[in-house]
Length: 399
Image (cartoon, rainbow, N blue to C red):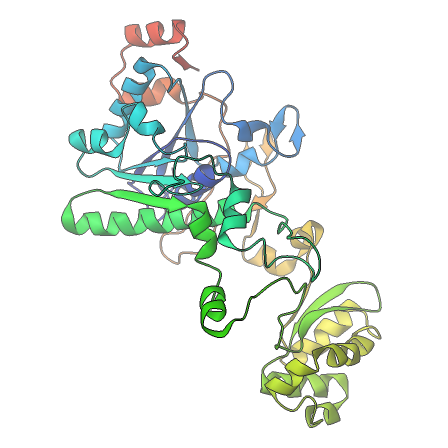
């Protein structure tokens, strides 16, 4: 727990993988006390997800940072009773089980609100808590497909592509944090909690700009266009003399003129083919060839220096090594290597956004499974030593 802007807020995190736990990571980054419930013996599958070293995911220290791990069997009625006791002492319950699961366990909103009227229950699911398909299984990839982003991602003529990260899960997590924060603000006025229903497909659809109205009102179906946005130029990725790839956004009229000056080709600014936004859009392919002939004559560092001097937005296409060595990333504390008893952890992404007065921090990395079970159950659920031994013997909890 840190001293960030959500300090004093207690969150009970249920669920696994990315969408719910990433939301929990962000809330913990901002100072909330996040208590993560995990199945005894196995824990969250994220502990073994992705690249694994020494039996643990390299992602785990980040996605579980600042959290307390409680190993509790939620499929056992006694485990459910312990979870209800914990929820009575929490401000937020964050979950990403299939809809209906919490109600089946006696942990639904109505049951929790009866004993804790201020409780905020945040649901993250593939298709939402209501609607004809709400009870279907819905992973992030399905949410990305239904939300529309897969259809618009990739090269023209190719099959729909993945963005390279679990964007649907991450967007749902972001909306879960927005929903949690705004529900907390409303509760400060009314004193009452509520449910927050985040569907992965809706989190994706919310970012799909004007695609629906473009189609219904103008018959325009936005599809895959690779690295360009049709009708907007120059705005593409260009290769340099040393093989780097640099994105250049020179599509605004004034910026385009500055780009032409940087290229040593001021006549291109007045060329009738490129003199205005519409013309550049129609002739984007030919204009891109002109620009790439120039970028191909310079190394990446020289190209970026010249563009910066002329006020043209540009940036190298970064890989992980670029992020790790970039001075701006370092200055903005976007590469963290927290100290642990076993040495530095990470690197991991820093906290976003930055708060001037109540900055979040990474006080601890992902905990061992059940590391805080005994302490949390004693503090918040009133579990006595005798009851603890009984629960431990029967495998309902673990430490």
